[in-house]
Amino acid sequence: MIRFVDWFAGIGGFRLGLEKANNTYEQIGDNDATLRGTSVETGGKSQLSTGYQCVEACEIDKWCRRIYARNFGHEPAWADSRAVEPSQPPDFDLFCAGFPCQTFSIAGKRRGFRDIRGTLFFEIVRICGERRPKYLLLENVKGLLSVDNGFTFEAILAVLSDIGYDCQWEVLNSKNFGVPQNRERVFIVGHFRGIPRPKIFPIGEDEAKDNDAAIQITYAIDSNYWKGCYTPGKSNTRTMIANAVDADGYLRQMGVHHDKPICHYRIRRLTPLECERLQGFPDGWTEGVSDTQRYKMLGNAVTVNVIEAIGQRLIEAIADAVP
Image (tube, rainbow, N blue to C red; front, top):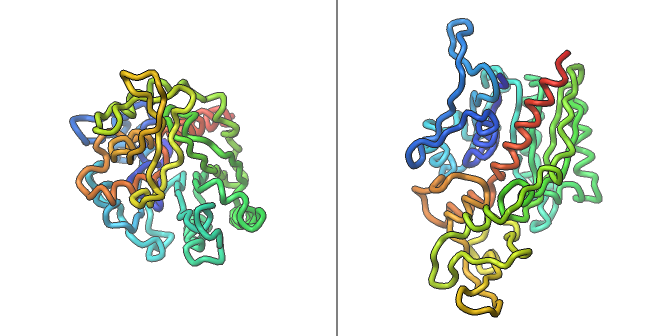
Protein backbone atom coordinates (compact mmCIF):
# COMPACT_ATOMS: atom_id res chain seq x y z
CA MET A 1 0.00 0.00 0.00
CA ILE A 2 1.25 3.48 -0.89
CA ARG A 3 0.14 6.01 1.72
CA PHE A 4 0.06 9.58 0.42
CA VAL A 5 -0.64 13.13 1.52
CA ASP A 6 -2.55 15.51 -0.74
CA TRP A 7 -1.05 19.02 -0.52
CA PHE A 8 -2.66 22.12 -2.08
CA ALA A 9 -5.43 19.59 -2.60
CA GLY A 10 -8.05 21.79 -4.29
CA ILE A 11 -11.12 19.68 -4.99
CA GLY A 12 -9.24 16.38 -4.76
CA GLY A 13 -8.03 15.66 -8.29
CA PHE A 14 -4.85 13.94 -7.10
CA ARG A 15 -6.71 11.86 -4.54
CA LEU A 16 -9.48 10.86 -6.92
CA GLY A 17 -7.01 9.95 -9.68
CA LEU A 18 -4.86 7.80 -7.41
CA GLU A 19 -7.85 6.08 -5.87
CA LYS A 20 -9.14 5.31 -9.36
CA ALA A 21 -5.72 3.83 -10.14
CA ASN A 22 -6.48 1.21 -7.48
CA ASN A 23 -9.21 -0.16 -9.74
CA THR A 24 -11.27 -0.16 -6.56
CA TYR A 25 -12.99 3.19 -6.91
CA GLU A 26 -16.76 3.24 -7.09
CA GLN A 27 -19.20 6.11 -7.25
CA ILE A 28 -22.32 5.31 -5.25
CA GLY A 29 -25.44 7.40 -5.62
CA ASP A 30 -24.93 10.98 -6.74
CA ASN A 31 -21.70 12.00 -5.03
CA ASP A 32 -20.74 9.35 -2.48
CA ALA A 33 -17.14 8.61 -3.45
CA THR A 34 -15.85 5.52 -1.70
CA LEU A 35 -12.57 3.67 -1.89
CA ARG A 36 -13.09 -0.07 -1.75
CA GLY A 37 -10.42 -2.75 -1.64
CA THR A 38 -9.18 -5.88 0.01
CA SER A 39 -8.39 -5.17 3.66
CA VAL A 40 -5.76 -6.78 5.82
CA GLU A 41 -5.26 -6.51 9.55
CA THR A 42 -1.92 -4.95 10.45
CA GLY A 43 -1.21 -4.17 14.07
CA GLY A 44 -4.89 -3.88 14.81
CA LYS A 45 -5.46 -1.47 11.91
CA SER A 46 -7.44 -2.24 8.79
CA GLN A 47 -5.49 -1.25 5.66
CA LEU A 48 -5.77 -1.69 1.91
CA SER A 49 -3.48 -4.48 0.77
CA THR A 50 -2.61 -2.80 -2.54
CA GLY A 51 -2.80 0.56 -4.23
CA TYR A 52 -3.08 4.04 -2.73
CA GLN A 53 -4.53 5.42 0.45
CA CYS A 54 -4.78 9.12 1.32
CA VAL A 55 -3.80 9.77 4.94
CA GLU A 56 -4.15 13.58 5.09
CA ALA A 57 -4.68 16.68 2.98
CA CYS A 58 -4.06 20.42 3.06
CA GLU A 59 -6.08 23.13 1.25
CA ILE A 60 -6.66 26.78 2.13
CA ASP A 61 -9.58 27.75 -0.13
CA LYS A 62 -12.84 27.49 1.85
CA TRP A 63 -14.94 26.59 -1.19
CA CYS A 64 -12.57 23.83 -2.25
CA ARG A 65 -12.56 22.53 1.32
CA ARG A 66 -16.35 22.34 1.18
CA ILE A 67 -16.30 20.33 -2.06
CA TYR A 68 -13.52 18.09 -0.77
CA ALA A 69 -15.54 17.33 2.36
CA ARG A 70 -18.71 16.71 0.34
CA ASN A 71 -17.02 14.06 -1.80
CA PHE A 72 -14.55 12.46 0.59
CA GLY A 73 -16.48 12.73 3.86
CA HIS A 74 -14.10 15.11 5.66
CA GLU A 75 -12.35 18.43 5.13
CA PRO A 76 -8.57 18.54 4.61
CA ALA A 77 -6.90 18.42 8.01
CA TRP A 78 -5.04 21.68 7.46
CA ALA A 79 -5.84 24.94 5.72
CA ASP A 80 -2.50 26.76 5.76
CA SER A 81 0.52 24.70 4.77
CA ARG A 82 2.81 27.15 6.54
CA ALA A 83 1.19 26.26 9.86
CA VAL A 84 1.87 22.52 9.50
CA GLU A 85 4.83 21.11 11.38
CA PRO A 86 6.68 18.41 9.38
CA SER A 87 6.09 15.93 12.20
CA GLN A 88 2.31 16.31 12.10
CA PRO A 89 1.21 14.32 9.03
CA PRO A 90 0.84 10.55 9.61
CA ASP A 91 3.40 8.24 8.03
CA PHE A 92 3.33 8.53 4.24
CA ASP A 93 5.25 7.17 1.25
CA LEU A 94 4.18 9.64 -1.42
CA PHE A 95 3.85 13.43 -1.31
CA CYS A 96 1.44 14.83 -3.92
CA ALA A 97 1.11 18.51 -4.74
CA GLY A 98 -0.09 20.70 -7.55
CA PHE A 99 1.80 23.65 -6.13
CA PRO A 100 0.42 27.12 -6.93
CA CYS A 101 1.16 27.91 -10.56
CA GLN A 102 0.03 31.50 -11.07
CA THR A 103 3.59 32.82 -10.99
CA PHE A 104 4.79 30.28 -13.56
CA SER A 105 1.96 30.45 -16.11
CA ILE A 106 2.38 32.13 -19.48
CA ALA A 107 -0.89 33.89 -18.63
CA GLY A 108 0.74 35.62 -15.65
CA LYS A 109 3.76 37.84 -15.15
CA ARG A 110 6.09 34.82 -14.87
CA ARG A 111 7.92 36.13 -11.83
CA GLY A 112 8.69 32.64 -10.49
CA PHE A 113 10.52 32.58 -7.16
CA ARG A 114 10.59 36.37 -7.13
CA ASP A 115 6.84 36.32 -6.46
CA ILE A 116 5.81 35.43 -2.93
CA ARG A 117 3.31 32.87 -4.23
CA GLY A 118 6.15 31.00 -5.88
CA THR A 119 7.74 30.41 -2.51
CA LEU A 120 4.92 28.03 -1.56
CA PHE A 121 7.06 25.47 -3.36
CA PHE A 122 9.38 25.66 -0.39
CA GLU A 123 6.58 24.35 1.83
CA ILE A 124 7.00 21.09 -0.07
CA VAL A 125 10.74 21.25 0.53
CA ARG A 126 10.31 22.03 4.23
CA ILE A 127 8.11 19.00 4.90
CA CYS A 128 9.74 16.50 2.56
CA GLY A 129 13.23 17.55 3.60
CA GLU A 130 12.47 16.35 7.11
CA ARG A 131 10.05 13.48 6.50
CA ARG A 132 11.81 12.08 3.42
CA PRO A 133 8.95 10.16 1.78
CA LYS A 134 10.01 7.65 -0.85
CA TYR A 135 8.26 9.41 -3.72
CA LEU A 136 7.05 12.82 -4.86
CA LEU A 137 4.39 13.58 -7.47
CA LEU A 138 4.24 17.25 -8.40
CA GLU A 139 2.30 19.13 -11.10
CA ASN A 140 2.55 22.60 -12.58
CA VAL A 141 1.96 24.53 -15.78
CA LYS A 142 4.12 23.91 -18.84
CA GLY A 143 5.39 27.48 -18.54
CA LEU A 144 7.39 26.43 -15.50
CA LEU A 145 9.99 25.00 -17.88
CA SER A 146 10.70 28.34 -19.55
CA VAL A 147 10.43 30.91 -16.73
CA ASP A 148 13.68 32.94 -16.59
CA ASN A 149 14.98 30.95 -19.56
CA GLY A 150 14.68 27.74 -17.60
CA PHE A 151 16.44 29.00 -14.46
CA THR A 152 13.39 28.54 -12.22
CA PHE A 153 12.90 24.90 -13.23
CA GLU A 154 16.62 24.20 -12.81
CA ALA A 155 16.43 25.78 -9.35
CA ILE A 156 13.47 23.58 -8.41
CA LEU A 157 15.33 20.42 -9.47
CA ALA A 158 18.46 21.57 -7.64
CA VAL A 159 16.54 22.20 -4.42
CA LEU A 160 14.85 18.79 -4.64
CA SER A 161 18.25 17.20 -5.27
CA ASP A 162 19.67 18.96 -2.22
CA ILE A 163 17.09 17.26 0.01
CA GLY A 164 17.79 13.86 -1.54
CA TYR A 165 15.49 13.47 -4.55
CA ASP A 166 16.32 12.45 -8.09
CA CYS A 167 13.58 13.55 -10.47
CA GLN A 168 12.10 12.66 -13.82
CA TRP A 169 9.52 14.75 -15.60
CA GLU A 170 7.36 15.02 -18.69
CA VAL A 171 4.85 17.42 -20.20
CA LEU A 172 1.55 15.55 -20.57
CA ASN A 173 -1.52 16.74 -22.45
CA SER A 174 -4.95 15.91 -21.03
CA LYS A 175 -6.32 15.31 -24.54
CA ASN A 176 -4.23 12.12 -24.68
CA PHE A 177 -5.95 10.68 -21.62
CA GLY A 178 -9.59 10.40 -22.61
CA VAL A 179 -10.82 13.98 -22.15
CA PRO A 180 -11.20 16.47 -25.03
CA GLN A 181 -9.15 19.30 -23.50
CA ASN A 182 -5.86 20.62 -24.84
CA ARG A 183 -4.18 21.07 -21.45
CA GLU A 184 -0.41 20.70 -21.16
CA ARG A 185 1.08 20.33 -17.70
CA VAL A 186 4.52 19.29 -16.46
CA PHE A 187 4.52 16.36 -14.04
CA ILE A 188 7.52 15.65 -11.83
CA VAL A 189 8.11 12.30 -10.14
CA GLY A 190 10.84 12.25 -7.53
CA HIS A 191 12.28 9.26 -5.71
CA PHE A 192 14.44 9.42 -2.61
CA ARG A 193 18.04 8.64 -3.43
CA GLY A 194 19.09 5.15 -2.40
CA ILE A 195 15.85 3.31 -3.20
CA PRO A 196 15.17 1.59 -6.55
CA ARG A 197 14.21 4.17 -9.15
CA PRO A 198 10.86 3.40 -10.82
CA LYS A 199 10.83 4.48 -14.47
CA ILE A 200 7.59 6.38 -15.01
CA PHE A 201 8.17 8.52 -18.07
CA PRO A 202 7.74 8.77 -20.95
CA ILE A 203 4.02 8.19 -21.10
CA GLY A 204 1.44 10.11 -23.07
CA GLU A 205 1.49 9.49 -26.79
CA ASP A 206 1.42 5.73 -26.36
CA GLU A 207 -1.42 6.22 -23.90
CA ALA A 208 -3.43 8.42 -26.28
CA LYS A 209 -7.04 7.43 -26.68
CA ASP A 210 -9.70 8.09 -29.30
CA ASN A 211 -11.59 11.08 -27.96
CA ASP A 212 -14.72 10.78 -30.10
CA ALA A 213 -16.77 9.02 -27.41
CA ALA A 214 -15.51 11.40 -24.71
CA ILE A 215 -16.39 14.39 -26.87
CA GLN A 216 -19.95 13.25 -27.37
CA ILE A 217 -20.39 12.50 -23.66
CA THR A 218 -18.82 15.78 -22.58
CA TYR A 219 -20.99 17.98 -24.77
CA ALA A 220 -24.28 16.14 -24.39
CA ILE A 221 -25.93 19.15 -22.79
CA ASP A 222 -28.80 20.90 -24.57
CA SER A 223 -28.47 24.64 -24.97
CA ASN A 224 -30.34 27.45 -26.70
CA TYR A 225 -27.09 28.20 -28.50
CA TRP A 226 -25.54 24.84 -29.24
CA LYS A 227 -26.62 21.20 -28.84
CA GLY A 228 -23.49 19.25 -28.17
CA CYS A 229 -22.36 18.87 -31.77
CA TYR A 230 -18.73 19.14 -32.80
CA THR A 231 -16.44 19.21 -35.80
CA PRO A 232 -14.19 16.15 -36.14
CA GLY A 233 -10.54 17.15 -35.96
CA LYS A 234 -11.32 20.37 -34.07
CA SER A 235 -12.95 18.86 -31.07
CA ASN A 236 -10.66 19.59 -28.11
CA THR A 237 -11.27 22.68 -26.03
CA ARG A 238 -8.58 25.15 -25.26
CA THR A 239 -7.04 24.94 -21.79
CA MET A 240 -9.55 25.62 -19.06
CA ILE A 241 -8.47 28.51 -16.87
CA ALA A 242 -9.46 29.64 -13.40
CA ASN A 243 -10.75 33.06 -14.47
CA ALA A 244 -13.12 31.75 -17.14
CA VAL A 245 -15.89 33.93 -15.73
CA ASP A 246 -14.73 37.03 -17.61
CA ALA A 247 -15.17 37.80 -21.29
CA ASP A 248 -11.68 36.64 -22.27
CA GLY A 249 -12.19 33.41 -20.39
CA TYR A 250 -15.11 32.16 -22.50
CA LEU A 251 -14.26 28.79 -23.94
CA ARG A 252 -15.10 28.59 -27.63
CA GLN A 253 -16.12 25.57 -29.65
CA MET A 254 -16.84 25.00 -33.33
CA GLY A 255 -20.27 23.44 -33.83
CA VAL A 256 -21.96 21.75 -36.76
CA HIS A 257 -25.65 22.62 -36.92
CA HIS A 258 -27.82 19.52 -36.99
CA ASP A 259 -30.02 20.51 -39.91
CA LYS A 260 -27.57 22.55 -42.00
CA PRO A 261 -24.47 21.28 -43.80
CA ILE A 262 -22.69 24.62 -43.30
CA CYS A 263 -20.16 24.83 -40.47
CA HIS A 264 -20.27 28.01 -38.45
CA TYR A 265 -19.19 29.27 -35.05
CA ARG A 266 -21.54 29.31 -32.13
CA ILE A 267 -19.91 30.67 -29.04
CA ARG A 268 -21.10 30.09 -25.53
CA ARG A 269 -19.54 29.41 -22.18
CA LEU A 270 -19.15 25.77 -21.21
CA THR A 271 -21.37 24.72 -18.34
CA PRO A 272 -19.86 23.65 -15.00
CA LEU A 273 -20.96 20.08 -15.73
CA GLU A 274 -19.04 20.11 -19.02
CA CYS A 275 -16.01 21.49 -17.21
CA GLU A 276 -16.21 18.64 -14.70
CA ARG A 277 -16.18 16.17 -17.57
CA LEU A 278 -13.29 17.97 -19.27
CA GLN A 279 -11.25 17.50 -16.08
CA GLY A 280 -12.27 13.87 -15.55
CA PHE A 281 -14.46 14.43 -12.48
CA PRO A 282 -17.79 12.67 -11.97
CA ASP A 283 -20.90 14.69 -12.84
CA GLY A 284 -21.94 16.99 -10.02
CA TRP A 285 -18.58 16.83 -8.22
CA THR A 286 -18.56 20.60 -7.62
CA GLU A 287 -22.25 21.15 -6.97
CA GLY A 288 -23.22 23.13 -3.88
CA VAL A 289 -21.31 26.35 -4.54
CA SER A 290 -21.79 29.20 -7.02
CA ASP A 291 -20.98 28.71 -10.69
CA THR A 292 -18.26 31.35 -10.33
CA GLN A 293 -16.52 29.21 -7.72
CA ARG A 294 -17.07 26.05 -9.75
CA TYR A 295 -15.36 27.55 -12.81
CA LYS A 296 -12.47 28.76 -10.67
CA MET A 297 -11.86 25.49 -8.84
CA LEU A 298 -12.17 23.37 -11.98
CA GLY A 299 -9.81 25.68 -13.87
CA ASN A 300 -7.26 25.23 -11.09
CA ALA A 301 -7.74 21.46 -10.80
CA VAL A 302 -5.51 18.71 -12.09
CA THR A 303 -7.03 16.41 -14.72
CA VAL A 304 -8.07 13.24 -12.91
CA ASN A 305 -7.40 10.94 -15.87
CA VAL A 306 -3.76 12.01 -16.09
CA ILE A 307 -3.16 11.35 -12.39
CA GLU A 308 -4.84 7.96 -12.72
CA ALA A 309 -2.49 7.02 -15.58
CA ILE A 310 0.60 8.15 -13.65
CA GLY A 311 -0.63 6.32 -10.55
CA GLN A 312 -1.06 3.09 -12.47
CA ARG A 313 2.41 3.44 -14.00
CA LEU A 314 3.96 4.15 -10.60
CA ILE A 315 2.44 1.02 -9.04
CA GLU A 316 3.70 -1.11 -11.94
CA ALA A 317 7.16 0.50 -11.88
CA ILE A 318 7.59 0.03 -8.15
CA ALA A 319 6.62 -3.65 -8.50
CA ASP A 320 9.12 -4.09 -11.33
CA ALA A 321 11.88 -2.34 -9.36
CA VAL A 322 11.56 -4.61 -6.32
CA PRO A 323 14.14 -7.45 -6.50
